[in-house]
Length: 273
Image 1 (cartoon, rainbow, N blue to C red):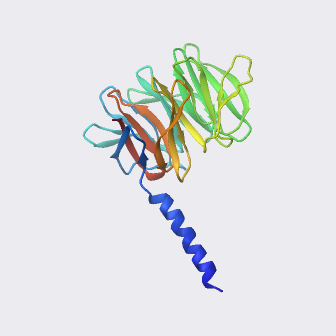
Image 2: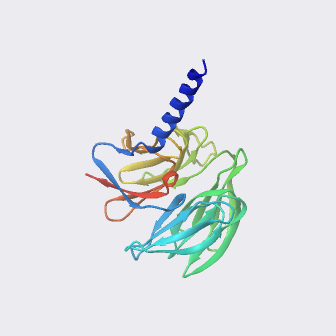
Image 3: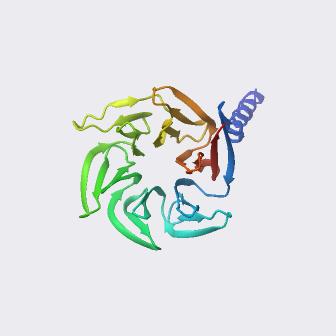
């Protein structure tokens, strides 16, 4: 009788191991390669004008950092002593970064200096357009969407009472979208404040990115996560599957994309055939 529970346990362990180590699968028309390893909890990325890559390493309790990976692969720590550094966005010749902890500053880094902009609570997603920087908080039922106005430093609360909202972006069709991770949905920010659900059925959607190919969505699941692409006609396609906690996806400027796979501490480069 004791052999049956033991067999069940072994089968369960084998299943979870299979999910963890099964290789990432690319759909037809795409291929990928691992370009950087040993990047602990890789989260957000910004490509520098000199070709280097800025990456946030989302470790907790002051162990997080932002590193610069040079084209030759050498690395240097740009900012250290952070706790869950998560969102990043390039702006004004530098970049803004957030920390996903309560009461942390959203900071602007430029020319080796860090300047605090405003305080937030578990700020994750960042988006900048013109004179306005948007920041969204990943909290349970009391998250906010904030807008910081660069010219005068004013901070406006656009939404409150949000739950597990992790990413916000503007798409090429003019819509501003944001994720609600737990419910697996994507909302459209609207002038009337209703913010309808425009896409649903995802497994913990986190980062969003729009370009000419459509809307990219990464699922922050530790097992069998996907990188999805919804084209301008609304057709959904799984580009990568069997990922482990993928985070930000960004274009490289040379026709490929970089994807931070935080669950495996690495960065992938995605190339269309």
